[in-house]
Amino acid sequence: MYQYSRAIYRSLKDLIDPYTDERTRLEYRRALLAECELTMSRLAADPHYFARPDRTLFQDIRRYFPITAQAQVAWAVREGVGAAMAFIDQQIEAGAFDGGVARCKATTRKGKACQRTPLPGRDYCPSHQHLEARSSLAA
Ligand SMILES: [Zn+2]
Image (cartoon, rainbow, N blue to C red):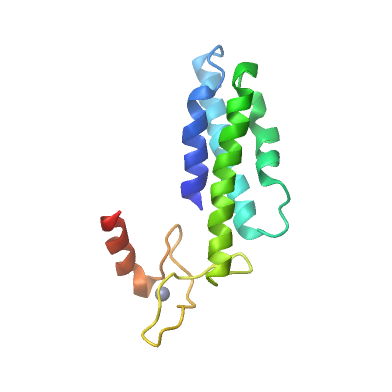
């Protein structure tokens, strides 16, 4: 999920209020990343019960941006959170999401979805992690 929070962060970090001093700006950036990650972990843990995550995130971070950037921030948040939600829906459909617990993406030799928990931040469990290396080489 963190690729989505980082993508939102990247699309927003340069819009942070340019008229504050550098220290405040750094503080805002850190807070922005933390809010994005918090939203993504809530969404991953509770995809069915987290209503309007895009609106919640926007309300939480809008104070870091000048008034002239608000519309762009709202748009980027909607796009980014929308992409994350689409990804979660896909995972749920594929059976890779079970009560908020991600499952390894691999298929076992018997043709069933692997039931093991993936390594932190990864798509595959320890026995299938070689598959991840291959897919990231292809990407
Ligand atoms: Zn596995």
